[in-house]
Amino acid sequence: MRRLRSLSTRLIVYWIAGSLITFFILPPILNLLMSALALFEPATNLESWTTRRARMIVADALRQDADGAKFIAMTDDLRSYAAANPAFRYAALEIGTNTPLRGSSHELAPFFQRLEGFDMHAAAFHLESDPNLDARGFERTMHTPIGRAKIIVYGSQFHWDDVFYQIYASFSAFNMVSYGLSAGALSLIALVVVRRGLAPLRAVAAKVSQIDVNSLRQRIPADDLPMELSPFIDAVNTALRRVDDGVARQKRFTANSAHELRTPITVLTTRVEKLAATPLKLDIQRDVRRIHTIVEQLLVLAQISEKPETAAAPNPLDLVEALVAIVADLAPVALDNHRCLELEAPSGPIYIRAYRWAIESVVDNLIENAIRAEPENGVVLVRATAGATIEVIDHGPGIAPAERGMIFEPFWRGGDDTPGTGLGLSIARELAEKMQGSIAVEETPGGGATFLVRFPPCEAVSASEPL
Image (tube, rainbow, N blue to C red; front, side, top):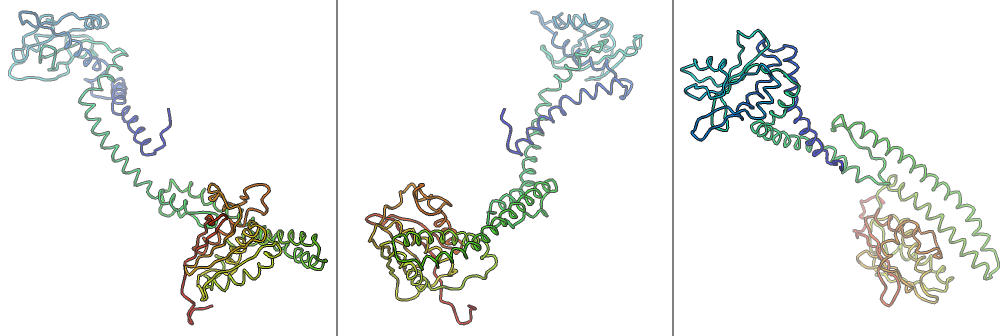
């Protein structure tokens, strides 16, 4: 059986199972124990337990012949019960006249025939003439197969199967209706209580769902939560603290490693520049640039998470002026690879709120990818629009529609023969989103890939705004 996952459903099911035992089974068991230990009044003992079963057997034995005469038939149940209880006696009386029915005990009937002027519906008794002081009898007006009648029983002995009969008899229609109403009401209350009690936990779950690798320093407050949830919240906060410490160590290692690599790469670049102009020099320069790109990407990964926490909010930046500088720096790289690099931009400025280093990292990555994809002697176009959108357009093989959702994942390269580390586009997307921007890729008309980076435009910096 599949385990119930809902706490509300589980609580209701457990409550119903427990209340069934408490409502129907536990009372007969407790009454049995208290009767055996004589904790009730002296009139109640173990033999008192037998009277209910005896009355039902006698009531079911009432019959009516063709002439309308009523009598007690010797049914199989009555015969078996009388055999198991040698001192058992029974009688049945007509309602109103107190006339004994045929088959009634002549010893019991006369006592109740003399009761005139009132209708006694139920009474426990003991015959003073009986030397067995534990013997008990009971008289009760009951509904029988032939109508209402007074049923009288006496002298039954206690047997252990009487316990099971009492438990079975407790599942009466009245008890079932009473239990059903109370169970329904209490189940509804339990459902409301559980839902209201778990409302703080749902609020905590919503807060936890917003935590990512860039917000691991957040902690879950436990002030307004039930004390039963405190161990869980403490464990979650402890786990967040461990993960935060681990991520911080990795970031420091990445940043420190990249910084340490910058110096030997700079020295290597200087020495390569002094070499004679040969095809081998161009190959070495291309490899050095690739190493330099990897190191810069590692530094940017560290800056993505560190700078927004330590630096002030970015001031308005002229996107056109930044693109002019970036294209000017990368134009020689394009020429070395037998490609051209062009810029289309409005004559006036386009302002966005962004870090210059972040814009340089995003556009550098896109242009370098476009240079590699562009066919030899082709033109990579960088375009800026008045809506603060940057377009980097190449005319290479393009990107298959099925892969456009994966190219921004870290370390995705599309194949083992694809150059690069697979970090550039991932870094570009994360930086764009950090500055409330977005990045997407479309197909270039005629073939190729067009990367679009969109930022919300802003007004130019005012004289009173700090730079």
